[in-house]
Length: 92
Image 1: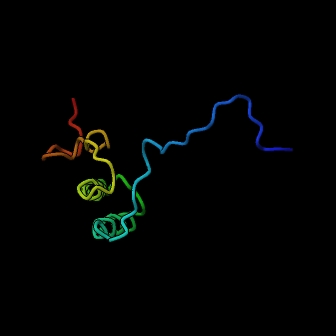
Image 2: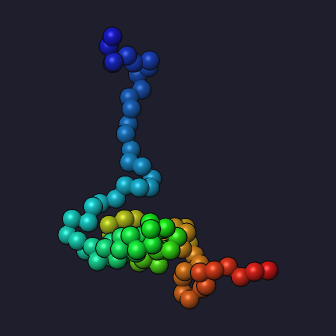
Image 3: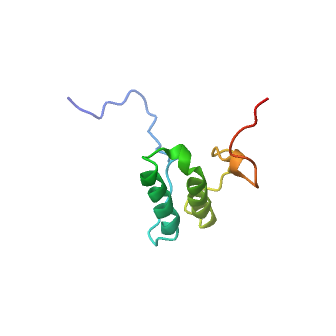
């Protein structure tokens, strides 16, 4: 059976994903941030919620060095960690 069955004259135009695809850190520019984050994960039984500051710092490093597209930290889920805002939400 042929795999080249075309049901029209349209050809597939691949495009990169919107998120999740970015250059590797070949020169280790953010290695210290990555190692700090990984150590935090190991020390906290891989509970990533306990390592949010380290994760934020790692992503900031990648954005500053153009290893990923710049995104507002609020959009990445770190809105509560920006500029001295409390990590815990206040009770009503």
